[in-house]
Image 1 (cartoon, rainbow, N blue to C red):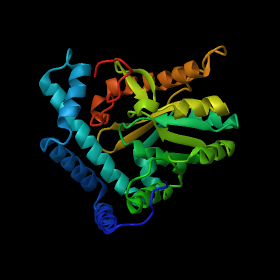
Image 2: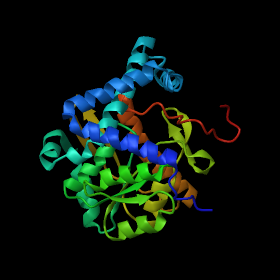
Image 3: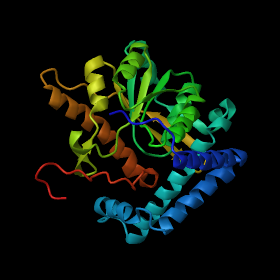
Length: 303
């Protein structure tokens, strides 16, 4: 049955609080808002919010080469980055063209341009890294961007989040029942952007991610296979406190013609996942380690 769209009293109270917080963030100078977000991220770490999950991931991946003190520093900085990102996102209504020009740079735009010249649109796949929401700035830079977005349980908050994105010129398509909207966007030669680095449960495709098999969404690979649109990995890298670089990487090489669909999906998925790994290993402080990325294990594998 479809989820009810009615708004409960709790939803309205939550929305009011979020809206008040977002208004307060917009009233602050950019630097003050960013550092307040970082401080709240530090507080969440100190209070132990998913701290064991974060440190467990870091110890498994970096434990042989980094000290416990260094791992704790990376973990805390990851929380601070998330806090900064959240408050920067809340200030989207204040993100002017002049501010974008001053603080956001674009690397690899030739890959976007070449994809659009082909007329098939492009599938831009990114991870929860740096300030991932800043991919919306591509719309202000002149690119036709459609975001594939997950829906929040509170539909009022969900609407606010999408209005922040749409205010920068981004079209949004909900993840649930999204296929028609995504195909329509690609037919219009748009860039369909999505995040694809979280646990996909039993419906995902297993590929190696940072040395361990991880269930990964198959959507980007299936879209590239069905439409012929190039699959472009990208990341939003933070430089210092207030500079961001949107990095668009070369398209993932198509699978061999003789590959079956399952093999082709795994080929594409592993291709962009390996790009994510490179960024995460270079800038581990910018990754969202709090998520239980390896929660779903392959059949027969130990947890």
